[in-house]
Image 1 (cartoon, rainbow, N blue to C red):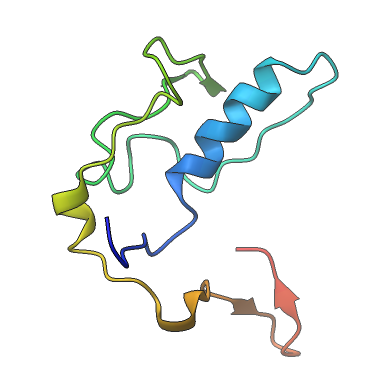
Image 2: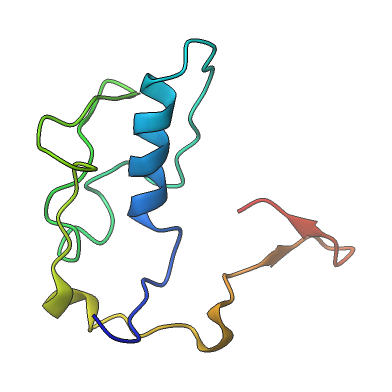
Length: 96
């Protein structure tokens, strides 16, 4: 896939972290920007399983996601690779 990016926190990072979390005995909390399967599901038709507030280990080989490159082309890359940034009223940055 050439020059294509997803315009958000990528699903892939959550998937990689799920594997790392499951392999770490002292893991605490995995934050999610969105529940898997509720955002960009046309781009990622298979995502990490999620049930009752928990990410579950994928049952498929690999990271447990499938990328539809054709659907990804509908979401052009952000020029310069920047992410949306939210500001407080005093113009300081905040979490999104």
